[in-house]
Image (cartoon, rainbow, N blue to C red; front, side):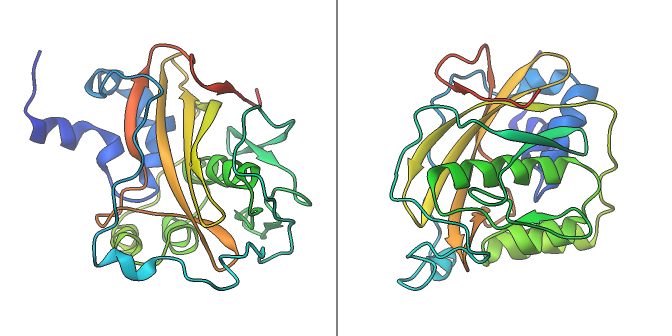
Length: 250
């Protein structure tokens, strides 16, 4: 069975803007198993995020408090630039998805009254914790999409597009289905930029992975969205977890 590129794009939830993509990991991919077959079959060799457009370049980090790794809530930074083994993590359910937590070392250092989690350490492990918590929050169905886009995305055209979409869309409802983080790779890391590749196990047993590209902005990790508001890069189905560092909370 073949489909045009246009129809495939429309039916693939990973092409939708903003944090509704995270909810699609839990809901749409499982409700419509055919979507899995629309994803490119791949291994763990996800590509780095595409270069920022000239318009987006204005949001690039500068030599300021952001660059030296000062956390907005005082979490310690690290001189490490790689993470070759899984951290020993405590996990908490955010909705139905497990997310790592270490509020005094890696984050989230702040959890507000609505359960919104923020403030992660300027370190490879802090970036990993940020990525996992962002996906869990986005898929929980309990968070306002406007708030997620405003707080989690790097200022620029991508965030503007996601905020605009969130204003015109009802937040995704929670689901009885449960997707879980199963592994990771830190594809690249510096104190100001990080590419975190997360492997996700879906409720039907299928595996998929994608890269979240992060930037250190105003003392915390933010997601670099593309100009149309997409937050995931290099989405592909996995046949197994070979090449990933195994890491999960359930």
